[in-house]
Image (tube, rainbow over the protein chains, first blue to last red):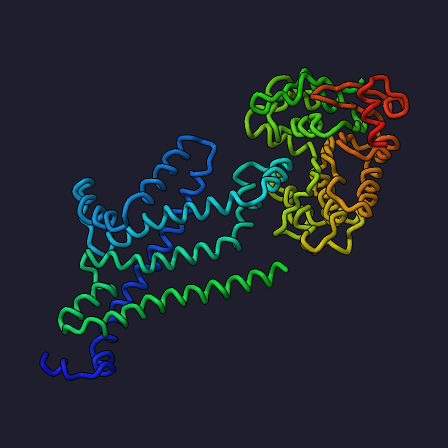
Length: 226
Length: 244
């Protein structure tokens, strides 16, 4: 360890920090994509329940969104890892527990995104579809929902970016994602700022990549519509 | 004597505590064109929207042919598919082409085969004079063209009656004529129509009967020449003086 102290910033970065952080980045990306996809799928389902006329579906969905958005994510992560398994008698490893907690959390935010998008479509669209004899589900699937796609892109990307950053909270489950490795490396070599600055860069790369994808999708869809 | 296409009995509609329709009785016979006129807020659009249950009546009965309108969702969907509607704001599906708009319901409600639906759609768009706009999206059509697509879309379900809810009110003045012309043709081909309109000229020339509504009731009804030319009720006279 004595040698490490004499390393320059670039040497320290190249030889120690970046290789370790890249491993962490892989896990962070996995966590983000897995819980992003699960969150989106769950969010779609809960959103449909949330706007349903059936109170048996609507109220639980609203309660879910309220509870999840009203409690800290860190608490939810710890709850899924420590409190849930004894409650329903299963064993959860840190990774599935992390993905589960992040998915359940993101689902609540995605629910609101989908709900808002659906409700932003002009009521006349549903009326025109119903007047033609379409049932509610067909009208939703064929007429209303397809019109939300384009306006969904910005808020979804926003939420995915937030999710990428939120994955740092599962470091509390000793999952070797970016923040966990950052803390370990910086503690071991006692050169914190050099490590933290690269950790920040990791998150920035993910978020900027999402933004680029969003821009591409938007211009692509805009071209098709005009 | 054939059964009327629509028979409305003691129809009441409340929005909250506000009674918008106060006991409407009206019969629409096969082949009739009924023009519903009246000041804004008189309840004429609400009446029309009750006729396919876009608004659920608070009380009263509506018969479509022999059947009581309403009931379970599936029944209602079937009944609605026989009642065409054209909206003031067109309500075309912006993510589908003109042809896509017209064939959507035949495909998804009737389960018609694609080729058959396309043939039907092409025929109907030709009929409303839009053969050359078949593959355009609504955003690239003028208001008048959009409304004609909307008429074709409603006709695609081969409805027994067509409801027009102020179909020309959202149009630029120079585009009103092309839509009225299509409606005129439909009427002359024997389509049963209920037309909520501000176009007194249309009511006079095309309608077989004019219904004047005010304050949620039918104030006066009869032949266009009588109601428009020689109104009996002071409220009708006052309304006509303002609009003519």
